[in-house]
Length: 466
Image (cartoon, rainbow, N blue to C red):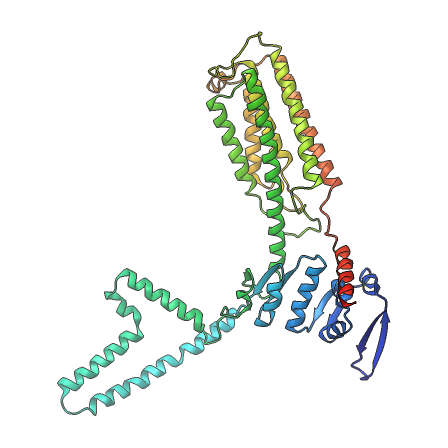
């Protein structure tokens, strides 16, 4: 049993509430739990931190040591933590969290303007008060105006020059002027424009956290999560695309090389340009402004990625082998040496076109859009690149411009083979698309199973105490 003492503030009396070990977990399923600093101390005294803290949603008025203990407790049970802090009392918790965000309290514009106006008013008064002193010094120095007057004037000039750095910069070099500007900026950062303490200084929360947000609220935390998930999804799709492209290209360059099938220099150049453009425009996708409840897959080596690669590669190989075998029916039987010079033929033309179709389909199918990134219609550069690639291969296969095909070293295709290639390309794209969507539905991103780790941590703690 778990005894918890709750203090009543109305009558000053206290009572004891007896809870079971799983009471906090059962209560958290229907309620949002909140706890204060005093109750936190009671949990520490009864060694019940691991049983209650992981299920609490709101922590109020807790001490700096308790903040750090909250972070370490969440980490013990396998939770990923993000901590926001704006003072030196949050440094310990920021260091313990997986992601630390320092918040800077911005000064309102109206207050800064008023403070500047207040600070700028006393300056002319001080200047007026200094002038009589200078005059009295010069008048009281004696009746030798040539010596004492010149000394007074020289002192006045030096004071004016020191108070007005712009006048003294006229005879300085550009490097010295830049050095003075940097020095002035450093002084403003250290002292503040309105005489207040600087916003960022040694010992603040920004010195202990990897992220610093110039914001007074916790809104930047959602931006970090959105951009982090977008980066994870983009990296995952990059690895999938690279794997599929490498497998298809390896088949073309190794297995088909034994049959004398090669790619021309200009053909490889066009293929590389399209591939580079696709990779560039995929990275142009931005995260969505709203944070989704769905979660991406945390790593590459999972059932979703492996099944997706194997299924799509099987469809690609089937399309590639079928197309090359169909093209071989229209060619005379001849023996082509693997090390012979390149000369265009029907098998080379079909293999090049099919390989490029596979690459375009790979980029289109494995693009991860909603609910993390922009979709393909929203990512305009990537959409235009896909349309350009589809138009290019449609023109090449249909042989509309013979000069273009001659420059690419592509021979004319029979009409029956053209229709089959277009039909098989559509079936290949449809099969890969349906397989990918089926796997995304069957293997969604799951929440880490921290409850099992929590029970294991509780068992280890009880063994140590015993």
